[in-house]
Image 1 (cartoon, each protein chain N blue to C red):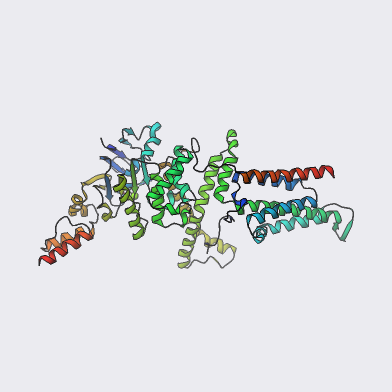
Image 2: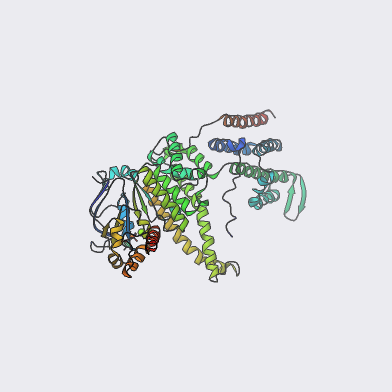
Length: 267
Length: 280
Ligand SMILES: Nc1ncnc2c1ncn2[C@@H]1O[C@H](COP(=O)(O)OP(=O)(O)O)[C@@H](O)[C@H]1O
Ligand SMILES: [Mg+2]
């Protein structure tokens, strides 16, 4: 029953978008986020939309998958929209009933803010849809490396992410097994009120936690036996090297950023 | 000089005294190129003993030396652990990375080996355990036996002198057990790798050059597998089973059949019985 939970939303492929170096992708995503906040009107959003569509088509992803990523935060988007629509200030009243006043300006502003959220989610989804969690972790460790100077535990963080990615499927499998074992002894996870269901989870969580701690203990010993002693002096098997496609992508994003800034200056 | 040397090694967990410690005064050597099996009932101290061999535990008293390096020498512990690789019982809890080849690379990355060399050694190690085609797979999709082979590759890549295994087949089904044991046997024969193998499957210990039998933290019996397994009374006294065929041949001998004492495995038993039959 838990088997169908997939980790992240990575969609394997071999498109130019997939091939962009994870470090570059993180940088480009950062640039994209800046661009989203710089945009001041709907023409700017048109530009973002063109960029997103271009990348999506190039990646070979179905638009459906991109849109699906909006689903979990649909409520937040709608909430932002209505909040801004009702409470943003404006002069030209479109609709008024008791304390609810909707003006042309507030409608515009609400749509603008909601779209900003949509574009932020779509852009970051494109990153996670086309980059494997491992590549992402790897890229993150290397991009954040300078932070080591201020004693930020970059290596530890990425090691934790790797181990989490490695063990989440194992723990899910185990949860499933324990659930079935408890169900076979008459445990009922699906009916009753919230309190009853929470109570039914206790015999599930206790063995799961005990086992997770045992696993952590054994893994630590196994890592030590294989000479693990933190990030100091460690090398990596994978060599990340920037390719033509990375520079092209960077050029495209910088050009768009420049174009948008220039357009805002001139108009 | 032996590759690994233990002299009067004692080990106590917290709250244990010297008399009821997990390891109580053990001395032996592991020779280069040999296959040493350690057997003994649950709680006899096998796991504790094997963890003393690569410095995961340090002796409370006595000394463990690997090629002259004492496991208590803090500044050389990583050098020692590189020489002595270790495989654990649970195949899941020793794989670190989300991709097979990355996991095999883990030890080499820890040793600071240059990337290109890591790639070559990882490929090589995976070929040796015949897991080359799984290089890009996720460990959690592999069978238990395959996971253990990946773990072995991870150790082989580090080019150790000794391979320690603590009940590596205990959590596997019979086919996985055979798969793992055959892999290690092949490596032992072809590459001459030294093996220290803790097991509670007596048949597995038959493959060894030498068997140590632990009891209450001490070595109770030792010798070639035949010597140890022919001492059926001694094994029973230690609460251990005898390999089924050794037991059967003993009973047949008691009934007056002329089965040689050396019969331990099913193949040997088949042969002995066929010879008896054709002699009639
Ligand atoms: N982490 C531990 N803490 C305390 N006592 C332990 C620990 N691990 C093992 N022991 C005890 O040490 C003895 C030997 O255990 P162990 O080496 O695991 O035996 P084996 O592997 O032969 O089953 C047992 O009596 C066991 O209860
Ligand atoms: Mg044990």
